[in-house]
Image (spheres, rainbow over the protein chains, first blue to last red):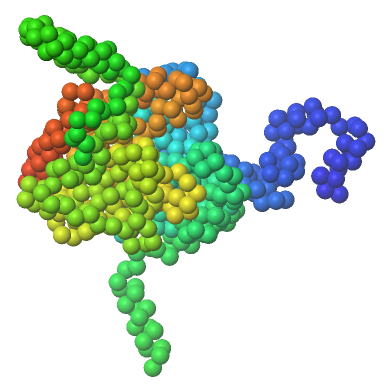
Length: 303
Length: 323
């Protein structure tokens, strides 16, 4: 019998209290799929890259997990870890920005909303940036902008491809126009990377919105998205209020974007690493000697 | 271009000034009717009025500036283009199925030299605004802009952009046509262009929608124009959970020309005629033309490689963090 049936029976027999179930989940032993609500052994969920084996729902994963999933063990070199955010506008809404930052840093163990570094994917060197939604909704401020720009510049000088895992609620309002300008700054760095003939692959994960969508998320040579990820520029609610009409259910999903031509491939997370490796190896610069030998071999074999 | 005698629509903070000016007019009328010489008193009152005007307009809050930036009589992109150009030919289309009325562009002769000018276009009245989509460009608008910028690049013409938008159009079709991609593409490509690029915020700089034609060698801004990462209303709703806190949000976000100069983002503030550009559009156009020509003069002295390097560094140095 499946775990689901076991719980069903226990519930019918009245011997399961909801409190105990909640406690088991909060202990971390079990996890509940946020889509189909099935209970899974957390260890198994993690082994499947936080993808529900029952329904295929992709739970949100965070930057540490992403790096483990994508980068070959013992090859990760983090970059620019010494950068941390400031409060240039001395922003105060219902709380001081500097307080919000301190609280979020304490809660998440992160310094800001992105981790960058160099590593290998199946032996191939890459420059990888991974955004983190836990940190103020993955919002982009000066530190995110600076770290990603440095990553891309480093990749350009080392002739590495760039991969950026995107997830963001948009520009960080508490840093005002400094945040908006990061969109242009990163795009500028990507122009020089591109001019050097190098490959850039953004991976759009749930949710990718706002200023990130209107800059580096949409500039990939090949744009990969995770299944059912919400990807868009304007917020759904804003569009609903502007147009005063109900939006289709699949609006701003990865699948909808694929259909309209803005995503190259949708790849399930469990297949992402091997697909990335394949794409990168297909775009490796070919040496002239190697290709000449190949052409000659082809010509000879046809006589 | 509105140069008629019709009095511009008044903003609430102009009221003390208006009352005083009304009194001056009344006194003048009475004096004329009764043949009394009140020259000295009038002079005193007019000086008072001028000082009051200067006082109000040199101490505007960000919300008040926002009102001026959004003023229905504020000169638009086309108003300025026509006022400063010797000749002007508007061009249309993105070559992809649309011609966005919210973003206009074309070729002009500025002080004898060919340039490409483009910018967001708001409407003159409600009907016009609806036709122009209130200056909110769709993906086709950004693609039209890019096409015209490529044209300028190919023919060695400097590019002058005019920013005046509440934001990029947020609609279903806009999303399906790739609003994000259209803006992103421009952000990247504008770094590649060889010709000089000058971007001027003439009214409202609405976030990504503004930045989509806002990557340039120089950024200029009119004194009372604003440039926002999010509208104060949206920011108040999200961070204060209270839309009525928009004036506080406007202050916190640092949206004025003076703020942007302090942040190292803005190159030059263009002064406005007393009471705002809408009160003397011809004078405002003169100031704009002067600013553009001055900056163009400097930029054309450089090689395209030098310009591209400086352009990259201009944006590269933006951001504040600790180590």
